[in-house]
Length: 261
Image (cartoon, rainbow, N blue to C red; front, side, top):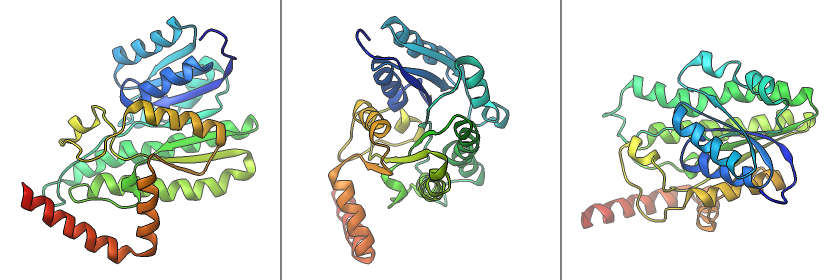
């Protein structure tokens, strides 16, 4: 981190691997203090140690988003350890690749707890803490599935759709407090996420480092929404203007893909 200016503290959930790890290393190298959080203590501390080894500032705090007691009060613990933080990156997430008939209520509740309800709790606490210190930024790492979900992704898409609507409303609510809310909408990213979700992505797959760069950009620009590809932006526009056409095209593509299998 030689020559990098010292910048504010950033909190990143799901920072032990994938996008979270890439973002933590990138921001740490740029002079940000980075609080890394996840439920994988060994991997988490390895990320933190790597940041410190390169001259950065980092603190590792265990966080299991499935445990309400872990989530509630987590950000107060952050401030006790490092002082005020300026940015919260809600990156942690899990998937489920099953049809509705194959899935259970318990599975839906688990994915919603990690991908949405824990995020709501963290955002509520972040708003209170940021408002007391003059502002800040919340970055929600969502998904293109928030705007158009695919088959066998009803659960995951629903959690990201909820995050999308939540982010829009929260953005309007906290703007006068000096708090920005940014939603990042990636397509498939090459991480261990898909192993736990039970499937392999097809088509264009991006790297964790490319999404980490968008997180850095979000901190700089404080944009409302950032798509990870031009194709995604075009798809969103087309879906808004002609949703029935998009539905027919997707149905055709699904039949075509199955005919090739």
